[in-house]
Length: 294
Ligand SMILES: Cc1cc2nc3c(=O)[nH]c(=O)nc-3n(C[C@H](O)[C@H](O)[C@H](O)COP(=O)(O)OP(=O)(O)OC[C@H]3O[C@@H](n4cnc5c(N)ncnc54)[C@H](O)[C@@H]3O)c2cc1C
Image (cartoon, rainbow, N blue to C red; front, side, top):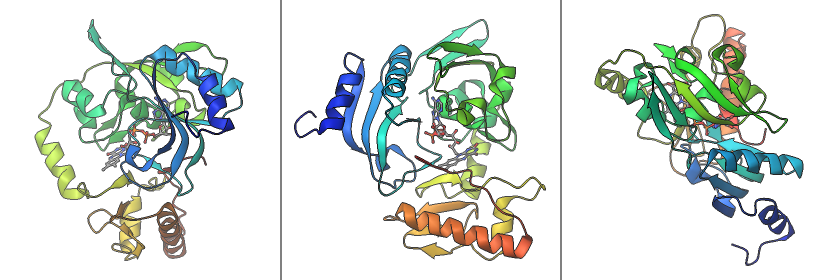
């Protein structure tokens, strides 16, 4: 990795020296997202302990190095030019411990595993627990906020704080962790009564384009109760395509990557959808999808 590394890379190697985990310079980010789109990160660090993750972010902040958290990358669009900073991946944080009815998990634990354990309302949502808490991920049945007992996250001061559910500031697909960019290190969850997940998963496979790369719902549902997918469908936009980016025929709020879509294709399609919907319904659809670095 050091061969051919420039000054910035050497500086970063110095900054992260001694921390456990894996550091890759000029890492392609597309394989770290479900959209499979985008350029390289200046570097990607995958810590193996929560304290290493916290320390890496503190050091990046101290040295003024741009950084971003990534979990399963299932809500992210990486620009074609990539991200000129440090991407910190939580996928090495897999702690799992049950005590007195509360499950304590590392931020990188797959949400699917937690759904099987006792979070049936989240069945079928890809990604990690940390990403789900940051996004307050959920389905029509409920969101992860309902089950959170505590969240351990890094404050801008460099201190680790255990947030109570009230302190998490959960709203529709949002939380204080996303709004203030606070890295989630670990989460405590209370189980909800188990239910057979199979019918829920079958229903999702029927209504969502699961075999094709995407980042889930692209737009937030507007506050007036209508769904973004319905508004897009009413505009006749299913199948609208720019390059290899296409509005799904199965679920109009999904944009799929048919193979070689670029981020710029997705963003042009987003723009087209927003303008069609606002001119027909007077509703501006806001992005739920996150563009890395913006
Ligand atoms: C096919 C498909 C279906 C989907 N269905 C649903 C659904 O039904 N409901 C739903 O809510 N979502 C859905 N999604 C979207 C996505 O799976 C969720 O938002 C998921 O919770 C994101 O988790 P992630 O680990 O992939 O986060 P990422 O995509 O990696 O990151 C999302 C955001 O969270 C931040 N983040 C990630 N990890 C951390 C951390 N440890 N600490 C702080 N911030 C962090 C990132 O910086 C970014 O801001 C779907 C996506 C796909 C591809």
